[in-house]
Image (cartoon, rainbow, N blue to C red; front, side, top):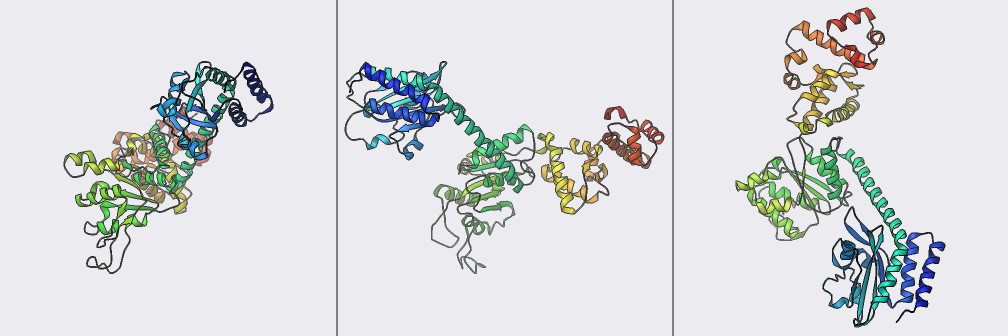
Length: 510
């Protein structure tokens, strides 16, 4: 089918009219493809858009493809014919798709074609030299014919639709950004299920949030490593509650807390009479977690025999109860955690390398609190509010001296130790402020005597207490001594005397 000059003019004219009559960009581009099919022997056509952030090329609008085929048509830059056009910015002609090994047929649409020859033409859609996407067509045409006219016409159409494609791309990018923001909001909301786990503004916590978002929607196995008390279990909860399995079971198993003689039964279940004390059939943790998520904490404590068993479960996605011979299929997502160095245990032949690689598909490191000190006060305020409500006290804030202690301590017990310290302080508080002496002795011992005044001398300890109270009130009044004196129930003269005696620089609090 040869296209005459009058046909060229007619096609360009009709496309030009579309830009005045159709405001919806999606409908506009679909109608352009339909017009091409009217003037060319086109069986299929599509406009692909390149999303730079993800380096993915998606079918945006199409003609002659089913919904299932469109979903499959995703490419990377440089991949296949479409990917190569995105990379090079140059048109590509494939005279016969059945003879071109680079033609991927990712949609699977061409499997439906009869024996006639199908050619494929793909041209870039550009603005200011930047390739935004492609427009391509499948033609029923002899492979030995010339394709010059079709390429020229398709290139002309690509120029006409470039701005519409650019607008579509910007809209899709906005939608993607909104989806990411929704994911972030979702994970923040679900963090309420995991107190203290994702709280923080440090770059380390932001990086963990991003990883959780990325991996939550997959079924990939995750290995969470880090010291005790860093919130590994809470990260696992955040992954589960942001996944498609969030409405299914989340089963926690602490390997270190299980008896070695009963651990296999706990994990995989047992049949009645399989061992002494097995008076009835029992489902194991894996079976209880079916369709949901199982979290295996302290995986480094798993004995060698059960490491083999777990590896088989991961590979075959089936289990057998102890004493049984029935194979039970499983659909369980596995999250694991450990405070131990598994790579070192592998070198010492204490942990199987093949199991480690199966578990470590997506690693997440939970940092110790000393590596995220900027989050200490956010966490402290969170726990202060939590335990004030729980215990029924109106404790509103933490004093300056107590803050100094919290910030200078090295926190070997990490977030768990911080939470326990704030809970203890709320219990001991006799007013609406947590003072330094409400904190555990370990924090006070960690301070240098000359820094905190805890020399054991009663007078010095009393001065430290008074100084702390005066500084708090100067902060409240922005350095106004008269107002601070009124709040403290004393006179400006007496307070001035105390300020000078204790070496307080009230100007710091203006």
